[in-house]
Length: 256
Image (cartoon, rainbow, N blue to C red):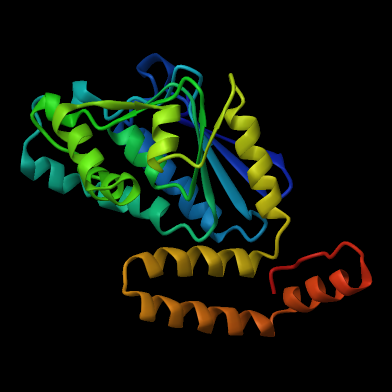
């Protein structure tokens, strides 16, 4: 059974389904490597303009595969070079949307936070409970969580192994949108379809500048924004979009 199922539910949209239901989609080494390979491939596929990642109704991903970690030491953890797997997701130039139902715990919460947009079903649960196991997050859980919800909420969650419901996560700023019932995937695909219909170069520049700007001071971030905005005036898609707007018709974008 493949640990990740790839689907193409709409034009320019890819859907990645984590497929370890017997383990609540725990992030085994095999699954993380497969995710890395798929993200590397989709990053280079010019026909794909948005990526949705999801699990199932029980769990988006309920953390790492603990059974395989009991007897592992620091040297083996370093030798696994897991950062390479996470980097493929983090460096993906296409917008990534996480559709979260059920548990997103530990590495599952970190995986969701690697996305650009998080759509949560109303039964979703987010948390970083690593402290219960005598360890701590190692794939951005402390840093991304603090940046998303602030130091004080993040400290409380991380040090007590506390969790957030979907509505609490939305109120805290961790989630983009909460939907009723089992509608997270459908909503994520709708958002992906809207993004995929936009000019691809403009989408890519917005993602890149927003993320880069968050890591620098405001003046530098504004300079990056201006330069990227000016460069887009040289694209065919800009001309097509503006001409269509003036003529009141629908443009077609080529990503050039």
